[in-house]
Length: 292
Image (cartoon, rainbow, N blue to C red):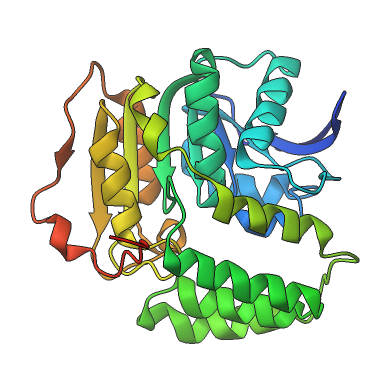
């Protein structure tokens, strides 16, 4: 059923690692966050297929890394062009696109510049323009990368991503991860990190016309919960769901996260933006926008 496969695409711009699993007749394209800069999805087909097995009957799932060698100064829009080329190479169009964190930034550009590729869009714990919080976080990670402090990046990610309940276990897991698999170079990570704080689609979000589900965490300490709210306010055909008590790692913690994506995929027609019951804009604090 899972039919997990590791794949490599040799594109004109460079080599891209991807994985594929599932047997569904619908295609789902998943884009991971900035951690992809430290390790691509190479060799991860079976673990991903197991984690996301609930999607495998309905979808054939593709998870794309950024190309192995990134050019200095590459933007999230450039990375979206690479993704468009990769999807062309595999004959993918009109897919459900799920972008997490930086993956969501890239997904926004794909939906803006290549709407034929995106039937529906899920933007998870991401943003449309930089704010003071992400500038501070990315600045810290870039400094750690300069010192080749892999464990520091892992532990800081754990501290900022999870709920208090999950954080203790995450510290142990990420401390172990930080002790193994250290990348030979941090250059790829730095390029991806910088692209997060230069990403800005805010004034173009009204060009995303496909159905969109924005998922955020009210306690997000990396991109902020307010970043999700303001995206949903700008996208015409959008539904917003905010998790109480969860932050940037909600896609690992929320037990109904994958079910929510699957149900969104089944929805027909369009809807006007709405905030789900119990959610108020003021519930999201600490947006950190300069001048706001």
